[in-house]
Length: 270
Image (cartoon, rainbow, N blue to C red; front, top):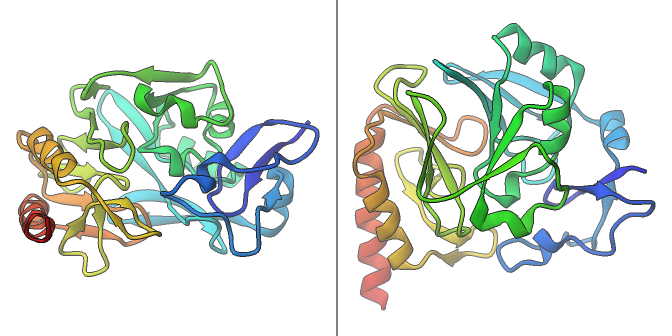
């Protein structure tokens, strides 16, 4: 039986004879059902009209879809010492993408920031040799295709190697996770925040939203928790959720300034 993929959020569901009646992720207030109603594709059907977009994004191999599909995040290959990682996933797995990852040393684990980017994470794990998928325990309920390959971690930090740490930032989802790489591809350290703190269009700031498409701001208490959690981590670069949405150089200062301006505005309104 096929594993259907939601056309709006790109999430792959467990195998069923017919498409699911609803997408729980899209019906949540942080997301939305597509304007044309709930629609589904199989992985095979997706492969008929889409292909992998494989490009360098600020020194890292990025993997997306061409043309754009669903939320349009891109995954990144993080070739860190002690743990070669695929950060985030996309809905389509292709031989070209798997070959490109293997040519760069392969993937030892997958880590996902939050439910909107789960996409076809189990499909990716299988294609890469049944590697472990790290998902925070607080977001377990949002996993739509269960798998023994998923490892649910707990607490605020999970060290994958001497250079790579997962950080539970919360806010957007209870388990929203950022990845910190001590070295980074350009030196000086890098932060990969998913949507916990999203790099905005000016690429000089980040913002903090409970729902990005529906414009619901994050609670100030959650933002302050995130700030305290990140306080001891150094980084020069911030890699955003999609192509080119990165702060390259001065990332630590940009994030601090963004904390200040966001909190000043939401607390003044309150």
